[in-house]
Image 1 (cartoon, rainbow, N blue to C red):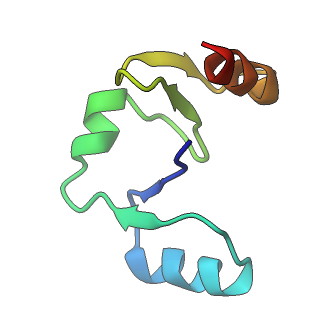
Image 2: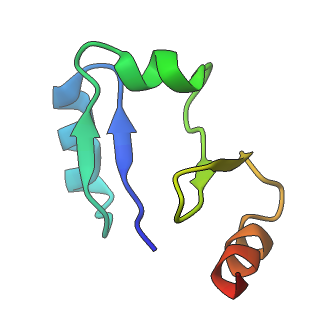
Image 3: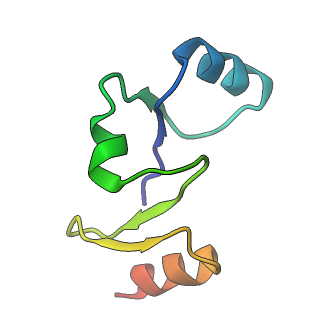
Length: 74
């Protein structure tokens, strides 16, 4: 399982936030907005659950833990 944070705004703000609230997954900068456009990002944070085949399975699931467990069981 991989978690990746994709930041679409001011990169300096993202770096500052990560310094203040340590996270244990990588973040990257969506410089040209390609990810934002591809996934139709409308707000922050947005959680996309993508399975091991690269298929988008859910967006902002109410029960994220349940969705993740279901995918791990497959």
